[in-house]
Length: 386
Image 1 (spheres, rainbow, N blue to C red):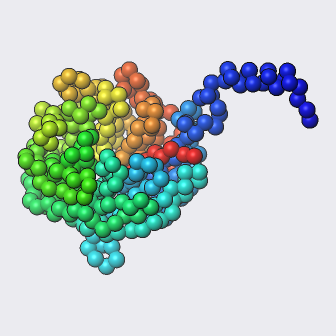
Image 2: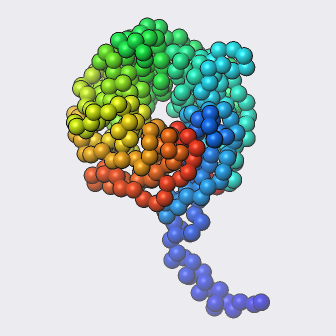
Image 3: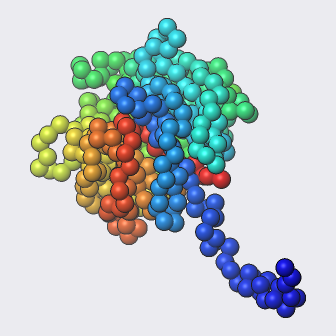
């Protein structure tokens, strides 16, 4: 088949006026969504979906990897490796859980196990990366400890570069009889690591050595929350001027101002995550600040809702917008998609993930699409697809 020179030039001219972003299969809109679960019932491990941010279309890819109780996930900054804490009390006959490293096939969504290491404490429940992507930080809930692990160039996890055993207790005899580390991440400038301990009612602050992965107590070494608050997770504001802590036992969010030079937190106040007329039992779970810095979201397990607040950009103060039912029971982790437009909620006890459109002006949530059926979902992570 031959093409005239004139027709060929016409095609070139037409192509010149086609915007680069309109290609139907543009990888810029394509992501993988990985779901961590508890495996005591039907679940087999980590599940995967393909997500198109342009259409909000989701395609199930099945089990990405079989592993025990991958209750929290983290992805390294390169997007090539995924890590899971295995939330178990014993690992290979010894007290403590595990951390598993996987290579991501960004075309198929399958995960290939690279290695596993002991987490250095029982029931690890959180994992994150420092800002360089060279170290993984782990919180061991029942063990009441935190650990740092170097990550090798091939994605494998090395022996711990730091380990700190917390000590003490607080006022709740049932939940705060000892330390319960629930969250750990480095600060936005990577100079400090902050550990949230539910059992101590404290934010423990460590100086973080980004070269060696070492942790040393800061001065001041911690910030206190109200007795019995039971802090669970923390979210920094994009400005780094404020930090917000969701308190599991009191169903509150506490606002702190943050001094990045000293690694110091100053408590500004707390607000309830529940409606005034709610009289049932409730435990909060997750907290996120929207990437635009205007809204804060937190999940209520019991009231089974996402509470939304607006954020005063000058003072950091929170103002209630409303409470939005999650369409299931026991909303655990939730995640905002890479565009900032859609919020995904993992409802652990109804085995589903429900999607909500985020109003960019008000922060209000409205349900979209059909719920995803996933057994015991508890953690969500997005990765760019290929």
